Length: 94
Image (tube, rainbow, N blue to C red; front, top):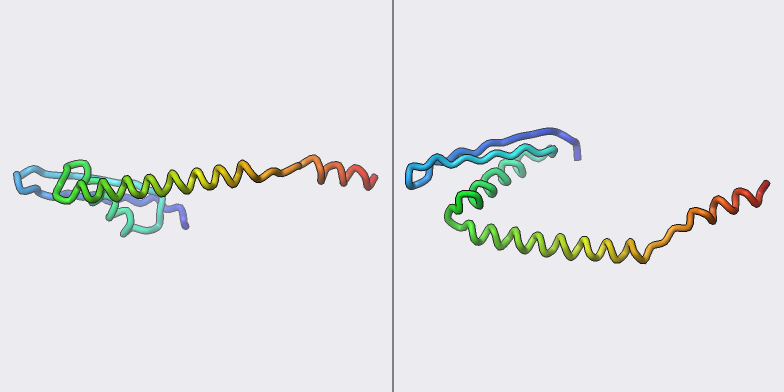
């Protein structure tokens, strides 16, 4: 991924004549993803139609992320690196 600072804005007139706005600024090279996040955020923030379905997707994603983080943490806990061993081997050659 190329670190590119991109931004997008969203503005929509609601049925009740409200002017809804949203904005995102991310370091990413995928402009379409950033624009989708702006719409997604606006739907959630203003509780537009289908916001509950989007919120459920966020919850599913957060649960998957938490599970992945726990798995990585468990794998890391089982991984041990002894940096003294290579150092001791270097000293034996002298």
